[in-house]
Amino acid sequence: MTRALTALLLALPLLLGAPGAAPAQPAAPAASPAGPSAAAPPALLPVPPALRGPWFAGGCASPTAMLHVTARAVARLPAEGPARLIRFAEARAQDGWVVGTGRGAEAPRILLRGDATALRTAEPDAKLRDDRLPGDTPLAEWRRCAAPPPAFAALHGEGLAMLGALEVLEAACGGPEAGSAGCLAALVAEGDVSGDRLLSVAEIARLVRGMTWMMAAAEDASPEGVLAAGGGGMLAGVAIGRLAMESLDYDGDGRLSAAELGQDRVALTRSLGAEGGRPLRLEGVQEGIGLLRGLLDGVMAP
Image (cartoon, rainbow, N blue to C red):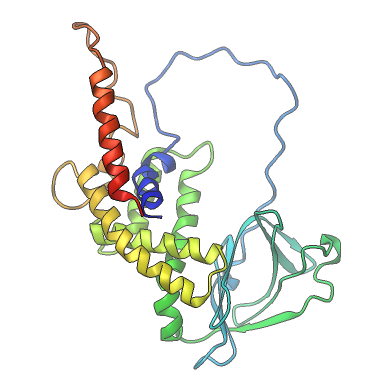
């Protein structure tokens, strides 16, 4: 787990900033169409803003469950029992409902209908046809509360914040028109708690803890499982934050800026080489890297 999270965080600037600007290249001849165009992606209707945010079942003093709705996801978090996180691969309007469909073999679905003060949801069986939704699926009733109960906020607050932040990052970093600079700026903005437009070890650790919550919720973890994942995320978050700081903090101020995250990843401005010299033998370098990799694998092994 720690090794995977470390790789994820250190690769995040590269993965999210994949469409980086590169030096201008001669225009290539236009390719002739070789076949039919790729199929359009499924429709993704965002959940109306009035339905987003936290909802509760039961009384506000001691609710039996919490439902958190974002633009493209729903997290159902019972006080007892497994969590359920559905991130929409497809969402559409149907007969007054918003129908969100997740990924996976079963393609879980959830239907939402309501206004800013009351919400109804249905989670139909996988075998129920789309044109018959919601059918006789039981409906759940949700209400707003003035403030989330402390137990729910303490257990799920950071994870839900990361869920919303991830959607912001996907919007800023995805698609053919996304650029690395805007993507990295969004990453810093979402992770920056102090407001200084930089990322500290604690702020990076917070992002990691949020990711561990999302991983646990996506696996239908119980409240105890979510709590255990949070404990592991706390330790891993600090370790990953320090490792990222040592790797990317070029000015040594103890914080990461968008420029440091994007160093050598936004534009290839220093990769043109020099005319003098001859190629060096790289066998010794490769052996050294192999030894270092083995050492790191031993240190980071669970």
